[in-house]
Length: 268
Length: 268
Image 1 (cartoon, rainbow over the protein chains, first blue to last red):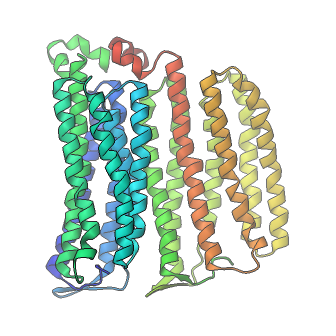
Image 2 (image 1 turned 180 degrees about the vertical axis):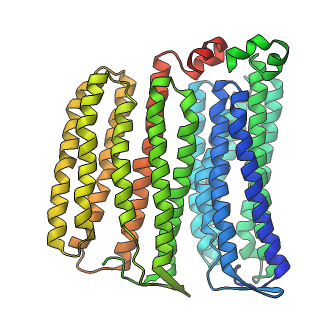
Image 3 (image 1 turned 90 degrees about the vertical axis):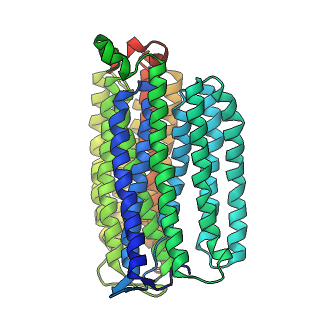
């Protein structure tokens, strides 16, 4: 197991601090998204709400991950040796199982698409997202690299399908959006690909690393932490940006309220 | 007792992760229901609030159940042996005693029925729900299978009475609803029957199992966890779906806001 290595206290502490950073970033973004709902037009508020839910669920899991990391090591001077209680990686999978379909949902919800287009996209993307995570889990918990590769490959199939739908069907739906929204959505999609790319790399680490090492474990955990900040907190902020832009395009933005105070009542 | 068995660490961990999944799912659904209240017309908001309360109460109990499971076993390498502190099943009964009457209440509240019809349904269903749980408890804590069967049978009487009221009196009240709402309510009723069916099966496990086993204990706890996610979180999401549908039927939906921003004040 990758977790059965002795760390220096500095390595142990770096990971703990990275987890703590994630918790703080998620808390802040959660409050931002909850609070910004009233600044955007009603049809876009559920997207911000779902994004806030993602951060709440992921924040809960990072609190558990933080506690599990603490319990997994015994500190003695400058070394952190495994305590015998394994670091619980399953929290990540339970988290992704719930949050990845929700990330897809918020991406579609913020666009204010026609009901039929929205339903069609969600019916394809949400089950594929859940399937992708569920197929990854058996590969993660095995110590057999062959088994890991099989489940990893199976998990890639729904992932590629999602990319296909995001680039073809969502691409077509984006044609009805303004140029600014189209650009923001393209950035969002690139962020999604960029950060989701971290997860398969971490998944495959045990296959390519000939033996467990402290550097590998610390690298994986810090890598996951940074990827999660980008894929969930930054992602949520970009979703809010799209909702603000679309609100302004509808003439319901708060900028208008500044110059024409009376309009404010109509979108309170 | 079913709990007095030695588990593998994997079995122990599976149950702990299932409890954690429930906590995360309840947290997410709680935020969803609280946040979605402003997206539905005022008469349907109390139903979403009651549904959120169910998730808060049940989430609190799952935090206790999680802690009780941790305290009930001592981990040593790959085995989890009973610590001597019994796993506290009573948390479930306290939870159901509070949440099951509330689940019935939210089901009726979301329909926006005439006051007399609503009162009549609640006067029958809410006490029956509380009685059903209260009669089950003495059967759960006994180690005598005969006593268990007697209380189980007594508990079934209010349960059957509830089914009768839900199919006859509620069925009649549904005739005033739109076709879409009627379909959604039928799905809700089926979910209720389907998930509530899990509880008597778990209740009767000690009667039919000749001896306690790890598989039985793990199966019961994971089964309860999944049934609770369906019966409380999915149930709440379906309740919100009915409220959104009924809001749209009243011409107060957020879709209208997109094209006629000024309508928004009427349901802010």
